[in-house]
Length: 455
Image (cartoon, rainbow, N blue to C red):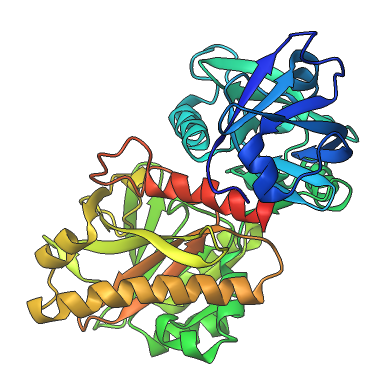
């Protein structure tokens, strides 16, 4: 791969382009990549391939094409890409398609609502690092077609029909939408017929995550005991073993539906329930009454029962940590960021959606109940735990993931524990005190697209 941006120039000079499928490429690139001149080769953009002939140009770092070819490929004047030549194929790209829930027709300047700023940031990162990015929803999918209807951000938003991207970044944040037959058919088509790549292709199931990670003995130290809750006997066993347990819906996010059960010294049980208005608690005088209280919920959805770990606190409010692990330019996992999340008053979950506040990880640790001499070791352990969990999950699971939000807590002894893994991490949770216009996490998405396209 030519490790610098190549600028697309679109011209319509008939004297220059006597053939629609003639392209001009900077002479130094032709020489370096040993591209044959004036011979038919395959030009590949996204999943589309066209036979073209290449002639040298004196313009530096430039790919010059005519308007008809630009329209066929869906390229804009002064788009930035990278190029690589392998025998008889010149690949330009990457071309990334981001799959989102829906777009708003009422607000042309904010077509994806609260996700619009992230989309623009990703587009800008593409321009800076050499990639083309488009955005589409399940409504835009044209089944059994070689093109896609999408939105692009290039000097403003516009709607286009483009060839299939070679990379699909799944940002659907609804399991119901993701599981639609049309969406699943599309993902299958991209991977099988179009030979494209789809990453973060499915939501993770909490039970699946713990089951997979428990197969790796080196990860056991991060995993609180956790099981799929099947019956009263399992509830009794876990509540006898641990003073506090958590029940979590296997298919949920943002702290929805979590129940905390705490055994009191008088052998009564206090149950805390999350709801749309915050939390409410009930005190029950037997575990059988607890099970009776929750049994209706168990009929409608599966729950994970998990050992409760007492986390460090800031001003008596629980603290947890969201680590963002991503694959990089070499296709390897890295921890891009770790932030602290401090629960709001009267909450036992720290999700930002439930009023939690962000903090730098060091500040959260310094202000916490953790002894000062443990802070440096804990900083290292949080990063190591996130990295090892991401690598362990990737090694065991079948689907393709390139970024994971890993929720961790630290107990009063400085031990790090995994709470859950999110395959659709928020694009707001890792922004704390970041003054850069384009976040490292967004840049890394483009870098991984380079890896998938050219390696």
